[in-house]
Image (cartoon, rainbow, N blue to C red; front, side, top):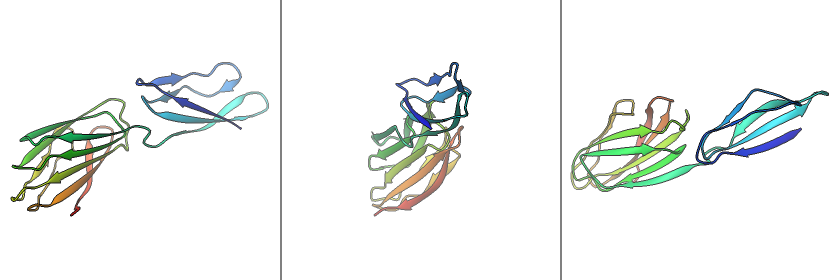
Length: 157
């Protein structure tokens, strides 16, 4: 068995195989690592499997409170903290083409002395999270390739 580790820079990269290796092209997404497993069949190395390292890229964002907070998602795992909410908030997301299905997004929201609601609109499967006075909630999302779908929201303090 031969295992090849391939890491892409900031662009998606294509791995093409020449003579002696049987397999189709493999796309390695930007800033990710993929392991390609090959076995010898007596004539050629044959690509038998490939795995992408989970969460090779992650990011953390801090956002000031505003009536509308725009997120720009470029990583497979993104953690966002929005400053204390002093009013209701609408959160939108633009997602980079390199972000794959299954990516995770976590958004922390903290209400001031009034319960503040957060509406997730553009880029999200429409949903809202109700706030609790002086408490924080964390909303978790998974990317389905088109939009961010809420997995749940829990109070964390």
